[in-house]
Image (cartoon, rainbow, N blue to C red; front, top):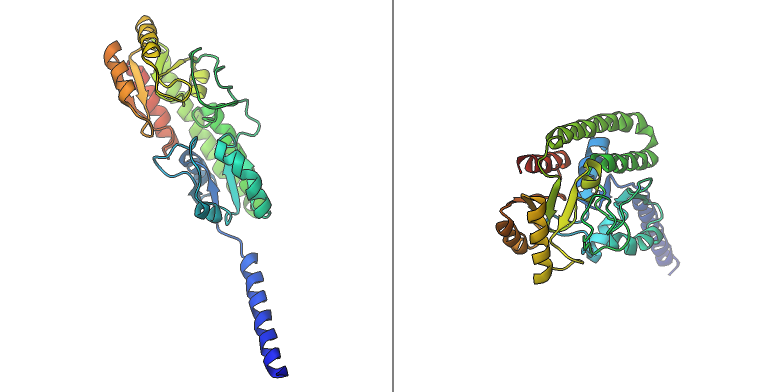
Length: 291
Protein backbone atom coordinates (compact mmCIF):
# COMPACT_ATOMS: atom_id res chain seq x y z
CA UNK A 1 0.00 0.00 0.00
CA UNK A 2 2.85 2.36 0.95
CA UNK A 3 4.62 1.44 -2.30
CA UNK A 4 1.53 2.24 -4.34
CA UNK A 5 1.11 5.58 -2.60
CA UNK A 6 4.73 6.41 -3.35
CA UNK A 7 4.24 5.80 -7.08
CA UNK A 8 1.07 7.92 -7.08
CA UNK A 9 2.93 10.71 -5.33
CA UNK A 10 5.85 10.42 -7.78
CA UNK A 11 3.51 10.58 -10.78
CA UNK A 12 1.82 13.65 -9.35
CA UNK A 13 5.17 15.39 -8.87
CA UNK A 14 6.23 14.61 -12.43
CA UNK A 15 2.93 15.92 -13.76
CA UNK A 16 3.22 19.10 -11.72
CA UNK A 17 6.80 19.63 -12.88
CA UNK A 18 5.74 19.14 -16.49
CA UNK A 19 2.95 21.71 -16.14
CA UNK A 20 5.35 24.21 -14.63
CA UNK A 21 7.87 23.67 -17.39
CA UNK A 22 5.15 24.06 -20.01
CA UNK A 23 3.87 27.33 -18.49
CA UNK A 24 7.44 28.64 -18.29
CA UNK A 25 7.92 28.28 -22.04
CA UNK A 26 7.24 31.63 -23.64
CA UNK A 27 5.27 31.66 -26.86
CA UNK A 28 7.03 32.82 -29.99
CA UNK A 29 4.18 34.89 -31.39
CA UNK A 30 2.44 38.18 -30.81
CA UNK A 31 -1.09 39.12 -31.84
CA UNK A 32 -2.70 42.16 -33.46
CA UNK A 33 -6.32 43.06 -34.14
CA UNK A 34 -6.21 43.77 -37.89
CA UNK A 35 -4.02 43.14 -40.94
CA UNK A 36 -2.54 46.66 -41.32
CA UNK A 37 -1.14 46.27 -37.80
CA UNK A 38 0.45 42.99 -38.88
CA UNK A 39 2.11 44.88 -41.73
CA UNK A 40 3.71 47.32 -39.28
CA UNK A 41 4.53 44.65 -36.70
CA UNK A 42 6.24 42.31 -39.16
CA UNK A 43 8.37 45.17 -40.46
CA UNK A 44 9.55 45.81 -36.90
CA UNK A 45 9.96 42.31 -35.43
CA UNK A 46 11.47 40.64 -38.50
CA UNK A 47 12.03 36.96 -37.73
CA UNK A 48 11.98 37.37 -33.95
CA UNK A 49 8.24 36.73 -33.60
CA UNK A 50 5.42 35.37 -35.69
CA UNK A 51 2.53 37.84 -35.91
CA UNK A 52 -1.08 36.61 -35.80
CA UNK A 53 -4.16 38.65 -36.73
CA UNK A 54 -7.34 38.24 -34.69
CA UNK A 55 -9.95 39.68 -37.10
CA UNK A 56 -10.08 37.51 -40.25
CA UNK A 57 -10.19 38.85 -43.80
CA UNK A 58 -13.64 39.94 -44.90
CA UNK A 59 -14.85 40.69 -41.36
CA UNK A 60 -15.56 44.13 -40.00
CA UNK A 61 -13.66 44.73 -36.74
CA UNK A 62 -16.45 47.05 -35.64
CA UNK A 63 -18.98 44.22 -35.45
CA UNK A 64 -16.50 41.43 -34.76
CA UNK A 65 -17.05 39.10 -31.81
CA UNK A 66 -14.21 36.60 -31.31
CA UNK A 67 -15.04 32.96 -30.70
CA UNK A 68 -13.93 31.34 -27.40
CA UNK A 69 -11.29 29.31 -29.29
CA UNK A 70 -9.84 32.55 -30.72
CA UNK A 71 -9.63 34.05 -27.25
CA UNK A 72 -7.84 30.97 -25.94
CA UNK A 73 -5.31 31.18 -28.76
CA UNK A 74 -4.93 34.92 -28.24
CA UNK A 75 -4.15 34.30 -24.58
CA UNK A 76 -1.03 32.37 -25.58
CA UNK A 77 0.53 35.46 -27.18
CA UNK A 78 3.52 37.21 -25.65
CA UNK A 79 1.70 40.47 -26.37
CA UNK A 80 -1.57 41.65 -27.88
CA UNK A 81 -1.49 44.93 -29.81
CA UNK A 82 -4.99 46.39 -29.90
CA UNK A 83 -6.19 49.30 -31.98
CA UNK A 84 -7.78 50.19 -28.67
CA UNK A 85 -10.99 51.71 -30.02
CA UNK A 86 -13.01 48.72 -31.26
CA UNK A 87 -15.93 47.55 -29.14
CA UNK A 88 -14.74 43.95 -28.88
CA UNK A 89 -11.33 45.11 -27.61
CA UNK A 90 -12.88 47.24 -24.87
CA UNK A 91 -15.11 44.36 -23.77
CA UNK A 92 -12.39 41.70 -23.83
CA UNK A 93 -9.34 43.65 -22.62
CA UNK A 94 -10.03 43.40 -18.89
CA UNK A 95 -10.78 39.67 -19.10
CA UNK A 96 -7.61 39.08 -21.11
CA UNK A 97 -5.55 40.98 -18.58
CA UNK A 98 -7.00 39.06 -15.63
CA UNK A 99 -6.72 35.59 -17.18
CA UNK A 100 -3.32 36.19 -18.82
CA UNK A 101 -1.32 38.42 -16.45
CA UNK A 102 1.97 37.59 -18.20
CA UNK A 103 0.72 38.76 -21.59
CA UNK A 104 1.43 42.41 -22.44
CA UNK A 105 -1.58 44.42 -23.68
CA UNK A 106 -0.66 47.39 -25.87
CA UNK A 107 -3.12 50.09 -26.92
CA UNK A 108 -1.94 51.34 -30.33
CA UNK A 109 -4.02 54.50 -30.03
CA UNK A 110 -1.93 55.64 -27.06
CA UNK A 111 -0.55 59.20 -27.51
CA UNK A 112 -2.82 59.76 -30.51
CA UNK A 113 -5.18 62.71 -30.85
CA UNK A 114 -8.26 60.88 -32.09
CA UNK A 115 -10.94 62.24 -34.37
CA UNK A 116 -14.31 62.26 -32.67
CA UNK A 117 -17.27 60.80 -34.49
CA UNK A 118 -19.19 63.52 -36.28
CA UNK A 119 -16.32 66.00 -35.73
CA UNK A 120 -13.82 64.98 -38.39
CA UNK A 121 -12.81 68.54 -39.20
CA UNK A 122 -12.86 68.32 -42.97
CA UNK A 123 -15.34 65.46 -43.08
CA UNK A 124 -18.97 65.80 -44.06
CA UNK A 125 -21.04 67.50 -41.36
CA UNK A 126 -23.78 64.89 -41.83
CA UNK A 127 -21.41 61.99 -41.38
CA UNK A 128 -23.52 59.34 -39.65
CA UNK A 129 -20.80 57.08 -38.29
CA UNK A 130 -22.14 54.36 -36.03
CA UNK A 131 -19.32 54.47 -33.48
CA UNK A 132 -19.55 56.26 -30.19
CA UNK A 133 -16.61 58.44 -29.21
CA UNK A 134 -13.35 58.25 -31.10
CA UNK A 135 -13.03 57.09 -34.71
CA UNK A 136 -11.15 53.76 -34.65
CA UNK A 137 -9.66 53.93 -38.18
CA UNK A 138 -6.37 55.30 -36.88
CA UNK A 139 -4.11 53.40 -39.28
CA UNK A 140 -5.51 55.09 -42.40
CA UNK A 141 -3.11 58.02 -42.67
CA UNK A 142 0.68 58.30 -42.51
CA UNK A 143 0.61 60.64 -39.51
CA UNK A 144 -1.49 58.29 -37.38
CA UNK A 145 0.21 55.16 -38.75
CA UNK A 146 3.48 56.43 -37.26
CA UNK A 147 1.85 56.53 -33.81
CA UNK A 148 0.58 52.96 -34.23
CA UNK A 149 4.03 51.77 -35.34
CA UNK A 150 5.74 53.57 -32.46
CA UNK A 151 3.44 51.89 -29.94
CA UNK A 152 4.23 48.50 -31.49
CA UNK A 153 7.96 49.25 -31.22
CA UNK A 154 7.65 50.14 -27.54
CA UNK A 155 5.67 46.98 -26.86
CA UNK A 156 8.04 44.51 -28.52
CA UNK A 157 11.00 46.23 -26.89
CA UNK A 158 9.31 45.74 -23.52
CA UNK A 159 8.79 41.99 -23.98
CA UNK A 160 12.17 41.43 -25.64
CA UNK A 161 14.64 44.10 -24.45
CA UNK A 162 17.64 42.02 -25.56
CA UNK A 163 16.79 42.80 -29.19
CA UNK A 164 15.99 46.47 -28.68
CA UNK A 165 18.58 47.70 -31.19
CA UNK A 166 17.29 45.29 -33.82
CA UNK A 167 13.70 46.50 -33.40
CA UNK A 168 14.69 50.17 -33.39
CA UNK A 169 16.68 49.77 -36.60
CA UNK A 170 13.71 48.08 -38.27
CA UNK A 171 11.39 50.80 -37.01
CA UNK A 172 13.60 53.44 -38.61
CA UNK A 173 13.21 51.66 -41.96
CA UNK A 174 9.45 51.51 -41.51
CA UNK A 175 9.36 55.16 -40.49
CA UNK A 176 11.20 56.06 -43.70
CA UNK A 177 8.70 54.03 -45.74
CA UNK A 178 5.77 55.82 -44.10
CA UNK A 179 7.31 59.23 -44.83
CA UNK A 180 7.92 58.18 -48.43
CA UNK A 181 4.30 57.05 -48.71
CA UNK A 182 3.20 60.43 -47.38
CA UNK A 183 5.28 62.18 -50.06
CA UNK A 184 3.75 60.06 -52.83
CA UNK A 185 0.22 60.73 -51.59
CA UNK A 186 0.82 64.48 -51.26
CA UNK A 187 2.18 64.65 -54.80
CA UNK A 188 -0.89 62.90 -56.20
CA UNK A 189 -3.32 65.11 -54.26
CA UNK A 190 -1.71 68.49 -54.86
CA UNK A 191 -3.70 69.48 -57.97
CA UNK A 192 -7.09 67.86 -57.37
CA UNK A 193 -10.06 69.35 -59.22
CA UNK A 194 -12.24 68.56 -56.21
CA UNK A 195 -11.17 67.70 -52.69
CA UNK A 196 -14.36 65.87 -51.82
CA UNK A 197 -15.06 62.16 -52.10
CA UNK A 198 -17.77 59.70 -51.09
CA UNK A 199 -17.22 56.47 -49.21
CA UNK A 200 -19.84 53.97 -48.11
CA UNK A 201 -18.49 53.48 -44.58
CA UNK A 202 -16.46 56.39 -43.12
CA UNK A 203 -13.06 54.70 -42.83
CA UNK A 204 -10.96 57.59 -44.16
CA UNK A 205 -11.57 60.33 -41.59
CA UNK A 206 -7.88 60.55 -40.61
CA UNK A 207 -6.79 60.44 -44.26
CA UNK A 208 -9.23 63.28 -45.06
CA UNK A 209 -8.08 65.33 -42.08
CA UNK A 210 -4.38 64.96 -42.88
CA UNK A 211 -4.73 65.97 -46.53
CA UNK A 212 -7.43 68.62 -46.32
CA UNK A 213 -10.18 66.53 -47.94
CA UNK A 214 -13.92 66.20 -47.29
CA UNK A 215 -15.37 62.77 -46.64
CA UNK A 216 -19.05 62.21 -47.48
CA UNK A 217 -20.65 58.93 -46.48
CA UNK A 218 -23.43 56.82 -47.94
CA UNK A 219 -23.99 55.02 -44.65
CA UNK A 220 -26.11 56.96 -42.15
CA UNK A 221 -25.78 56.15 -38.44
CA UNK A 222 -24.44 52.71 -39.30
CA UNK A 223 -27.38 51.90 -41.59
CA UNK A 224 -28.28 52.12 -45.26
CA UNK A 225 -29.55 55.62 -46.13
CA UNK A 226 -33.23 56.47 -46.50
CA UNK A 227 -34.52 57.74 -49.87
CA UNK A 228 -34.56 61.33 -48.59
CA UNK A 229 -30.97 61.03 -47.36
CA UNK A 230 -29.91 59.66 -50.75
CA UNK A 231 -31.58 62.60 -52.52
CA UNK A 232 -29.76 65.02 -50.23
CA UNK A 233 -26.43 63.31 -50.89
CA UNK A 234 -27.03 63.26 -54.66
CA UNK A 235 -27.79 66.99 -54.74
CA UNK A 236 -24.80 67.90 -52.62
CA UNK A 237 -22.50 65.61 -54.64
CA UNK A 238 -23.55 67.28 -57.88
CA UNK A 239 -22.95 70.71 -56.37
CA UNK A 240 -19.47 69.70 -55.22
CA UNK A 241 -18.62 67.89 -58.45
CA UNK A 242 -17.71 64.65 -56.69
CA UNK A 243 -16.51 61.97 -59.11
CA UNK A 244 -15.21 59.22 -56.80
CA UNK A 245 -17.27 56.81 -54.70
CA UNK A 246 -15.26 54.37 -52.59
CA UNK A 247 -16.69 50.99 -51.58
CA UNK A 248 -15.25 48.42 -49.18
CA UNK A 249 -15.51 44.63 -49.54
CA UNK A 250 -17.17 44.04 -46.17
CA UNK A 251 -20.11 46.38 -46.94
CA UNK A 252 -23.02 46.28 -49.39
CA UNK A 253 -22.12 48.34 -52.47
CA UNK A 254 -25.61 48.56 -54.04
CA UNK A 255 -26.47 52.03 -52.71
CA UNK A 256 -23.01 53.32 -53.58
CA UNK A 257 -23.38 52.11 -57.18
CA UNK A 258 -26.82 53.71 -57.51
CA UNK A 259 -25.43 56.98 -56.18
CA UNK A 260 -22.40 56.87 -58.49
CA UNK A 261 -24.60 56.33 -61.53
CA UNK A 262 -26.84 59.23 -60.54
CA UNK A 263 -24.02 61.74 -60.14
CA UNK A 264 -21.79 60.44 -62.95
CA UNK A 265 -19.03 59.22 -60.64
CA UNK A 266 -16.88 56.10 -60.83
CA UNK A 267 -16.92 53.41 -58.15
CA UNK A 268 -13.53 52.41 -56.74
CA UNK A 269 -13.15 49.42 -54.46
CA UNK A 270 -10.62 49.92 -51.70
CA UNK A 271 -9.75 47.79 -48.70
CA UNK A 272 -8.55 49.85 -45.72
CA UNK A 273 -8.22 46.55 -43.82
CA UNK A 274 -5.79 45.04 -46.34
CA UNK A 275 -2.36 43.87 -45.22
CA UNK A 276 -0.32 46.04 -47.60
CA UNK A 277 -0.82 49.42 -45.96
CA UNK A 278 1.41 51.39 -48.36
CA UNK A 279 -0.28 49.96 -51.44
CA UNK A 280 -3.73 50.92 -50.15
CA UNK A 281 -2.71 54.49 -49.26
CA UNK A 282 -1.29 55.03 -52.75
CA UNK A 283 -4.31 53.38 -54.40
CA UNK A 284 -6.68 55.79 -52.63
CA UNK A 285 -4.59 58.79 -53.69
CA UNK A 286 -4.41 57.58 -57.30
CA UNK A 287 -8.19 57.19 -57.46
CA UNK A 288 -8.68 60.75 -56.23
CA UNK A 289 -6.04 62.04 -58.64
CA UNK A 290 -7.97 60.61 -61.61
CA UNK A 291 -11.35 62.12 -60.73
